[in-house]
Image (tube, rainbow, N blue to C red; front, side):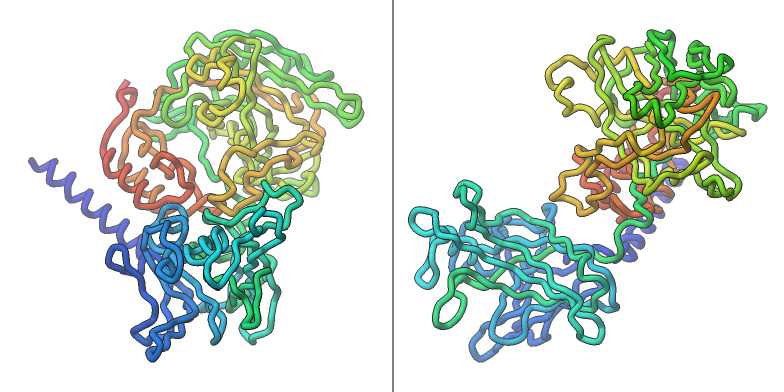
Length: 584
């Protein structure tokens, strides 16, 4: 009974902390969800307050009590997406806010001041989500007594409905303007014509640092009294602050090869260190080994890559490194194919881990080394179930330029490339891979590669000259998050180059993970506890693209790339649960 009370007390404490964190959440996303409304209702300024606040922003409103009319911004949670005309003025055609949220704002450009969002302090606005409201949408779609049907009777008329967003600094000077078409019928091919009916992100970084944003509308349909198209649109989720710090998107931790007797991470040299029981198998045989020319014989024994990780930076096999002339002559980079007695399956979370022998630099040098960054030799990772058809993990490399012969890289700029985690000088971590990330590859869909029956892993060296590129075009739906450079792909890959002797990727081991039953075990020590809660707390309300982003904290499925209440609910459900392998 006492232990149950302690468990409940601990959990209540956790809940209180999370609630507090929610109130102090990162203020860089204005979602309007804190605004309280009865179900299926709206606020239009009839209280005479002159506007409302959303996070660190003020939304203007002008209400005329005599006429019962308003312009500027209102806010709503109405889910009716079918009613047009004036009765639909408080409805977004999407039925919900951006990302399925309840609240959203409706803007009406009237005869007074333009709808204006004013920031508490000047800041960069990364962007805002917009869509049409019912009144404007159905007017353009069908026409109404005052406005035409867009495209005309046969769809050939070149109509358009344009939103213009003007940034102003704290002195009222214009910093720039951004345009976005809420409807566009100007295409030669009429099938390309559109009226926006989903939430669309408008990038506003070109405006620079602003104090306010003013919104205006224009249309191809005008009459003697001005624009005929109803002057409405909807707004939600304003993203503030400069783009991600140094491009850092991928702050995923490596998986430790060793633990101490208390189950915590340990160096291989610790007296009580044992192989991490999270591993259920290791590479068992070499299928092929084809290094680049010039590998020193000391580092060319492929069997050193078999069996458990050792943490010994001499216990490696080198794939070699290509020089410039070899790259220019299309010489293939070094590669190795390994087989496994333990089949690798697509379970929850990560499925296998690749260990290289990179290390964290302790000094700054003229050769490109930066203390605290990683001396890494990177490699592509590919998997196969039949030994013939391989699928390469889509990867990311955001290192901005060549780093030099002894250069280091910021590992949070790297994703799904082996070698980004240190495994030398007392630290033994490897880079994990999740087979779910290749589930939509054509070879997987066709059945040529079975991600529940992976028997082979191929590592291909990447010469760090920038001639080889990443591919990351499947990570995030572009309509969901605006961190384009984090996932678009086709970036040049840089690491220390050229290297010699044991140059290029140095493989130490590849381990197969026990399937993770409890995804809330964020640090992968086998139990959902306060250590995991600390990680969840550290990135609460953080989202993809921020320096504090931890992918494993995005627990709820499908992923929405923000750590929020849905993820906390998963964490709560798994609190103090332990994996079976923990006590082996």
